[in-house]
Amino acid sequence: MSKKHTAIVLAAGKGSRMQSAVPKQYLELCGKPVLYYSLAAFEESFVDEIILVTGKDDISYCKEQIVERYGFQKVTKIIVGGAERYLSVYQGLLAAEEADYIYIHDGARPFVDAAILSDAKACVEQYQACVAGMPVKDTIKIVDAEDFAKETPERKYVWQVQTPQVFSYALVREAYDMLMEDQDAYSVTDDAMVVETMLNYPVKLFQASYKNIKITTPEDLQIAELFVQR
Ligand code: CTP
Ligand code: MG
Image (tube, rainbow, N blue to C red):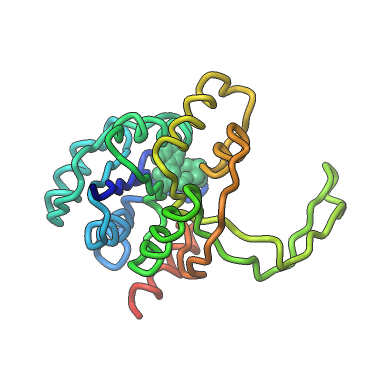
């Protein structure tokens, strides 16, 4: 039996750091919404199904102006997320029960591509838990509460983490079920952390691309426009 690969694309954030009235995943990037680009990458890939997670007021916009307008056949569900990213992920996991592998991706990260997805597939089939990332280019400092440098980790061991973050379904579901029982105890910023912390399971990093940026602040959108124009 072939395995089912399901993507959860997150688009339920408010984008406070972007400081725009429209959430960043819906801002226009060279004539199309930011969210279009990652959905297109999954649509054109080996992935079987896409679950789109959005805000309750944006369900019909997503359905009509994105999924129907661009003809995304693999988006089978458009569901309501939660107030925090991990809560949106959890709603996606609940909607993906038949999946064997889960690809959690930020809808605000438009440059995921076929190469990243096929590397992710190979990696998750081998390790069950893997995340896209890149070694940092700058030296990173750990600081204390007064911003004095405390530690300088060796650069070759420091990576910036991206999405997709990819897991076998049973593993990530177990980790998130555990998190949900004791949510207040943790401050969760990515999915790998949940698997690492809850299950103590080793998560493999694989090199994606320095282009696989997340639109977070206004200058990111300008950089993204240059990438699309190339
Ligand atoms: N996200 C989500 N549900 C949330 C929060 C975030 O689905 N409650 C999604 C965002 O839409 C985005 C991705 O998770 O695609 C990464 O989150 P981030 O870059 O932090 O986006 P926002 O939370 O929207 O932005 P900010 O933190 O600046 O408010
Ligand atoms: Mg956020």
